[in-house]
Length: 138
Image 1: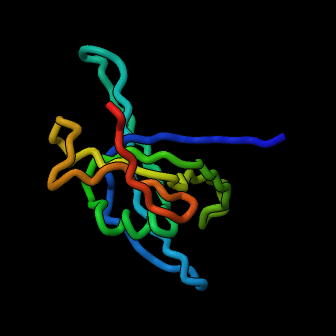
Image 2: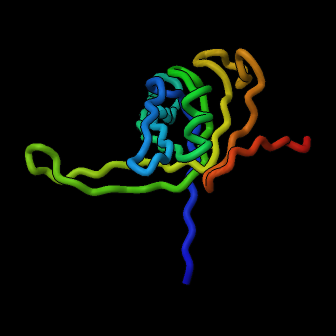
């Protein structure tokens, strides 16, 4: 039986993307996204921030490296990959990485509008190699 998983995150980019290439020449771009959840009310209002590592591959990596910048608000859709490992002191740890299928640039940190600043970049797909710009029909 086949399986399927998908994860969608929306948050602010924590650092400028890092671009690299595999030994076979495949482009890989990595960056982190801070996803902050607010809960509670009144004086009991709290926040919790989770950092998610994102990796983009092929044409999507080149697009991400060109357009994504630290502080930008993005929505990323892709497959979650969880890895277990031992840290330097031998304690078990886990990490979460999102292998992006596409992303949408939403604006700069604190603009409150959810709009793109500096231009309309659109929705960039291409998890299987190509880079698509999709038009929203409404």
